[in-house]
Length: 390
Ligand SMILES: Cc1ncc(COP(=O)(O)O)c(C=O)c1O
Image (cartoon, rainbow, N blue to C red):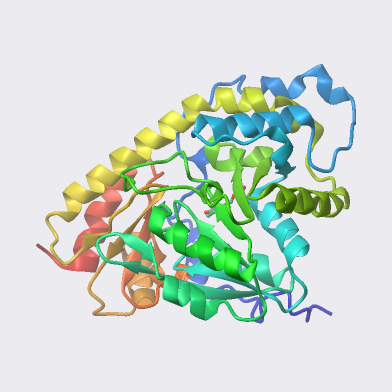
C-alpha cells in the first residue's frame, strides 16, 4: 500500500535518530547543536507580534491564486529592502518555500525529469524532488578558502531531461552566497539550454562576511529566474507559513510562467488570508527578530572561531551568511561514529557532513542559532573530541 516511489525506500530512522530517541526516552538531556527553529532559541518575540493577523480585512475570502495584492506587495517590498527592484505583479505567494519548490516542479517538470541541485546543500531536496516524481541531479560546490560552484559539474549534470537549476544563496549549510561570476556562467547555460534558475534566498538577510562579488538570482535578467523567500527565515516566523516567489527575466517568459503558475496555484489556494493581509506589517515587525538572529549568529560564529583557534586540527570553513557553520575535522573515524560518540558520551547532537551530502569526510555542521552559553559549553566539549587536545 505504501510502495509509492515518492516515499523513501527505507522508512526506518537512521542510527543517529535512533540514538536521539533512545536518549530522550531515557530522560537524558541533549544539547542540540542542530537546532534551527528560531521560535525555540530564546529570542524575545513581542507578545503582540501576531496582532496584525486579527485584522478585519481577513474576514473576507477573496481566493487569488497568485496571492492577495497586499501580500504580493509586501513581498515585493521585502525584495526592495534587500535592494532588489521587483514589481508586485511579478510575485506569487505560497505557504512555504517547500511548497514553492513543489509548485515550481509541477510547473516545470514531468515525472522522471531532472532538476540540478547543489552538493553539499539542503537535505530536503531529496524528498522535495521525490514527492513530485522528479530526480535531483547533483552538481558540485567546491571549497578553496571560499565555496564556489563548479560550473563544469553543472554542465555535466545538465542532460536532456534537465528542467531547472537550483541555487541556494546563502547555501545551507556552507553559508556561501552566489558569486557574480558563477551566476554569469549559470545564466549562460540557462539561456543556451532554456533552463530556468531557481534561487533559494531564504537566508539572504543573514550576511556574515559575504564576498563583495556576491549577488542574487534575479540579477540574471536574460534567463527566466525564480527567487524564493519567506517569513520563516526573514522574520523568524516559520509557523505562519508564508513564502513567496519573485519571478525574473525577459517579460514574455515571465508572463508565460506567471500564467501557467497561476493554474498550478489555483488548484490549491493554500495560503491563508490572515497571513497575506498581515504580511507587510509582520515583515516590518519582524525586523527586531531578524536583528536578534543576526546578532546571535555573528556572536556564535566569532566564539566558535576563537575556540577553534586552539585546535589546529579543526578548521571552521569560511561562512559568508546563514545560520550554520561547517567544521572540517580529521577523518580518523567515520563521521557517523564521531557524531554517535558525541551524542552518546557528551549528550551533544551535531549534524554529520554526510547529512548534507558532502562529497567526502569528515565534516560536522553546527547551528549558530543555539543560545550562547549552551553553544560555548557544548563547543568546548565537541572540539577536543573531534580534533584532539591542542
Ligand atoms: C535552504 C532552505 N530553504 C528553505 C527552508 C525552509 O523554508 P520554509 O520554512 O519556508 O519551507 C530551509 C529551512 O531550513 C532551508 O534551509
